[in-house]
Length: 112
Length: 114
Image (cartoon, rainbow over all chains, first blue to last red):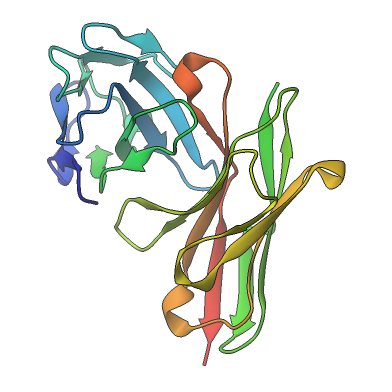
């Protein structure tokens, strides 16, 4: 999906390890989002950022932190990974409020 | 509270047959509605959107959806299925809080038989 780049694409962690998922956009959109996708549950919002320097909690923020240091990048950090955080993580961006969100290709994260 | 319900987690059709994927929404404000498609190991791609203009919305790959306020529905259709349509489809409504997050249905996996 052009415009939203997520790294890494795959990752396996052990319980208790930490890692940061990266998201970068080249579309100059203000809003950025982190979702997690679990089977049969659609996607659920973890955190979002309405503009550079601001972040807010979504539906399922526990166990995560985020950082929006500039307009282009929005990172998601797991401080102490747990098996319940095994999921596919998607970053999304949006320009105006009545426009759709554009998604990256996802990070597939397994925690053993 | 806003919500989206997709009826049927799996739908199977024959190639050339009509595709109908059902979506019902709940919203206390005029909704913005979206259909996304996800191919295996890929992200979500926008198929079409409803943002209070025409009630019949045409999207990519021959898909369309009709907004019916009286039925609170936004069903996705395609007259003739193609093998390449096999994927998972998500209906979503834009939330009015939490930064305009998308509220997703649980998804419908479409299989196309030759």
